[in-house]
Image 1 (tube, protein in one colour):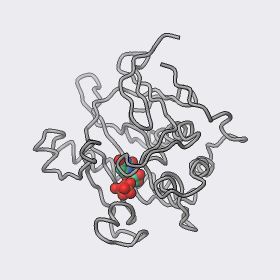
Image 2: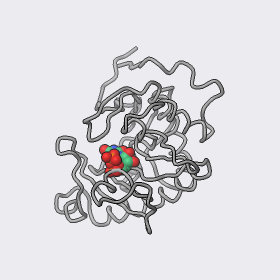
Image 3: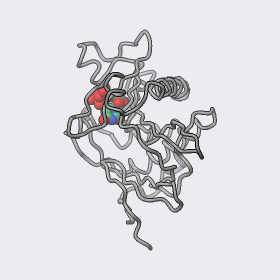
Image 4: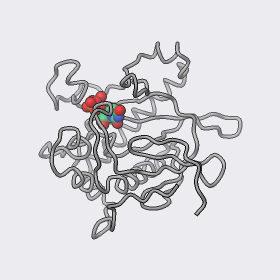
Amino acid sequence: MARRRQLYEGTAKVLFEGPEPGTVVQHFKDDASSDNKQKRGVITGKGVINNRISEYLMTRMTDVGIPTHFVRRLNMREQLVREVEIIPLDIVVRNVVAGSLARRFGLPDGQRLERSIVEFYHKNDELGNPMVLEEHITAFGWATHQEIDEVIALSLRINDFLYGLFIGHGIRLIDFKVEFGRLWDGEQQRIVLADEVSPDNCRLWDAETGDKLGKDRFREGMDRVAEAYQEVARRLGILPEGGFGDISGPTLVQ
Ligand code: UDP
């Protein structure tokens, strides 16, 4: 097999040049990190599950007119996406107090917010992803006021859609992180949802019991981490009968 050109390697994903110009292949790994990369580990099968869940959620969002970079899933661990110019921001949307919001303001975990909050963090691991204001974003030239307005509007639409989708499966969407990119469409530039939407970047609790599903279990050193990812896929109705087959070993072809 021809060697593929690697564009980027992060904790959870490797990006390769795609088969056609303007495309990228996202390869999902089992590696995980939290607390700004202080805590690291491997969650067996996570890459396969996140590839499926992100495919499912991006497709559902496309169905309701939310623009995304997703094209199609290629295999167990890979999906084809459109190449975009990533806006260097982590956008966090919150419905319920948890994580860094609870720590920063000394609030109890689980308190429902009167209205959803949209926060911006600068994507920079060395600096620990500092929180930034619209003032910083425009002054540093990362995005224009108009782009920020669009990012906020899209983030809130995504939140409304995902909240409803997850609650229909007995899951409460506490908060999540998304990234956006600029996509050239002929002469026109559009902002689209990029990266992934999976239990790696969503805080998901069981709606009845409050049990933590997904990344929270890893973050807090709890047991049954891999099972919690599978449980999210099962509830969304995308876990094939008998599981995903052999999801153990990494199969990174370069
Ligand atoms: N998040 C993420 N990547 C990051 C930081 C946060 O995906 O680098 C997600 C995280 O999974 C959670 C939300 O953003 O769903 C809010 O995270 P928070 O700021 O509360 O930080 P944490 O609790 O992870 O320390």
